[in-house]
Image (tube, rainbow, N blue to C red; front, side, top):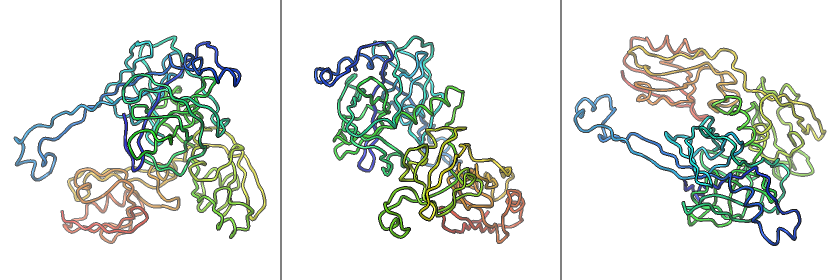
Length: 460
């Protein structure tokens, strides 16, 4: 599967094998051929065929609460089948495969074809749209060739790499290049910013979910995107680092179906020359902490607003995305060192990584009665809710977690913070339930959406 982005196209490659093969051990051997690396890795590269069935309404009025009653005979909803082609990497002998979420995340049927033409049915056991990674389990698989993971923090710009995949559906293909850049964390690809390894190894549509490997046959990253004007490779490809892949696979093997990230509970901005100069710092390194939740594990470790975080686990952090990547790669329960500056003084501490606390109780409430706010689900804002909905760290009160039926048509959206209903302040979910029963036809609801205040007015 392949997606064009505003100057980018999502792509993928293929996996590697863990069999005992000879790989190049000197520059002289590498100069002769990459074939030993390919022989060691290609058997674990798979093609993925994913099918998704979506409903396509025949009537433009279907589902409308008013017009649907007049157009019931207009036509039934017609299912439409979407097919996608991508690649995957076998990581364990018993059939754990990793690919891109955009290839398999919404699939209703998945078929995986090995390099030797063996086929397996597969299902997604863990999908994470934010990182564009998905972990699959091949049904009935055993004794498969697989690819060992490399610590992606060890790679350097200039290292030789191979990309293996199935571009344009032509069959398994290998391309060679180098690591062109590290810590590419300011790119806007797909649904959000990430943290990528850049390579000039040719990657094209159909490669999504494939492997980027080093000259010893170890997985460096999962290829996921390219920057392109033409839709084809122009030598600027991006791969998700293997350390994040390892963290996601680890959670999948414990039975998790959703990837849980350690909570930072802070927001910050990357340093630049002018900011560093204003703070009296010798160089524009690190991330300036602009806000900090009182329950943040970083706050517990001693971080304060205005501090400059320099490193996590000994690795530099120069953007907020790098901090998020480091936390996700380290995983829940890990203890790691954090280094920062405060007023020019170097400081450090050990931070224990955990999920955002779900306290106080969110008291989730859904309005089901035939009233103006029918279909509205709200919850009390706590750290867990803040993390789930990406709310400002200083957000308090009650937030919309879902809007269906009348509430959806009135204009409520997930993430709206409810401030007042008909002039009555809202502090708890129970306040919304009480306000919903008011005997009035004219409704006015004050909200905060995306940091902006707005007011919904409607009749019921």
